[in-house]
Image 1 (cartoon, rainbow, N blue to C red):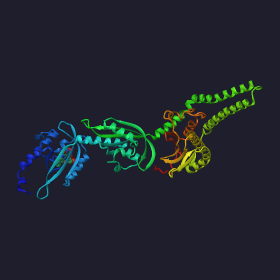
Image 2 (tube, rainbow, N blue to C red):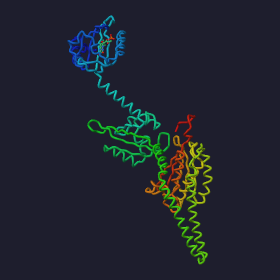
Image 3 (cartoon, helix red, strand yellow):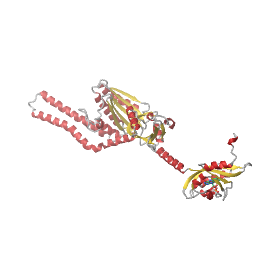
Image 4 (cartoon, helix red, strand yellow):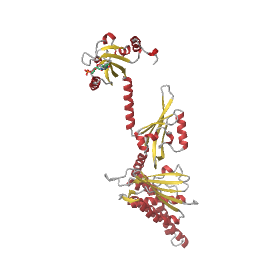
Length: 498
Ligand SMILES: Cc1cc2nc3c(=O)[nH]c(=O)nc-3n(C[C@H](O)[C@H](O)[C@H](O)COP(=O)(O)O)c2cc1C
């Protein structure tokens, strides 16, 4: 070491300690009262504690202690010092004016040439603000960690910096995988490119983005979920956007339950139902009555051909009544469904066999795909059969006039539900009709009663099932979700993997 760096005058050291911003004291080595006595304290220490140097000299640091000082820390300190070891710890101390603060300090013994401890020195720091900040941070971390909503933080470049437990669980991911990834490539981000562009545009201009949308991709699981997400910018003190926080919630189940509840509301609309029935029965009855009147008035004069035509029309009208009665029958027939555990593959194969001939007659090709993951479902087989027939019937009507007519029947597992899809490649339901299609007696075609979908939804709701429709100009798909297992079953060896 160059001799110029050797400090041979204690004055120089003292001068340095006097200017140090860190509080520093030296005591003697006597740990019992009235020791350890303070032999030196720098100005940073007197400033921190509020005691003047004359008030400190010869006194013990115990003067800083008070009612909330942690005695376990002091005990630990004492045993460390008795063993000649370094001590590091923190607890509440009190300034001269009685104000409480958190002191963190570090004590080291000073030994003579013979190795005996002659003094101790301590470096102390008021860490109240730091501890409070950490406490708040921990509380916040815990609160966010315990939220059932997903929380993801990402920076301006879109790189994820934090994802809470709820998100990791929902996405089936691992923290290491999510951190550093691009937020819009994560499970739960909107998958439609236009939506993504819009989100980035909104956020880029400092506005909040809020949407409920379907997502297909979770890691390793291809299933459709609905999420409700809000992304907002986080700004620093100067108002610059530094990060973004995304808060999301999976609303799939809520939507499902809402749709079941909505189906139950059916009963509240009995007035609509009765007027529909009145209309459906009233028209053919009036028309039959009118025909009968004509026949009885002209009984002797009417030519035979005319009589036959009137009789034919009456037959047709009665056919309409019969059709309506059949539909209504299926509505109440399964009012008390008897659900059982159904083997999806076997059930659909049987259904296909029965439906196929009708499809063929109408020139419609019926395809069936059952995923390996679709094993069982919980439903009344007859009611479900009726629902599928209704849906296939609708699909066939939609396909009338189309060149290539296809209906696909698919089954897959979606978490604890089994998903059944009936898809056609017809022209689709116009968007302004879509919100009404489940309403009873709502129909866009002549001849239909408008009961098929309403009844299907009702039957499904009785079996804790739900149905929703997606439609575009490429076709329509009806998606049914039913419990995979008996929902009333307790315990069991259920495999919880989705
Ligand atoms: C160098 C040195 C600095 C100390 N600084 C503090 C301090 O800042 N706050 C405090 O509560 N105790 C401090 N102490 C501890 C007390 O002086 C005392 O040793 C402690 O209360 C344990 O002894 P006791 O159990 O007999 O009270 C310090 C001790 C030494 C040797």
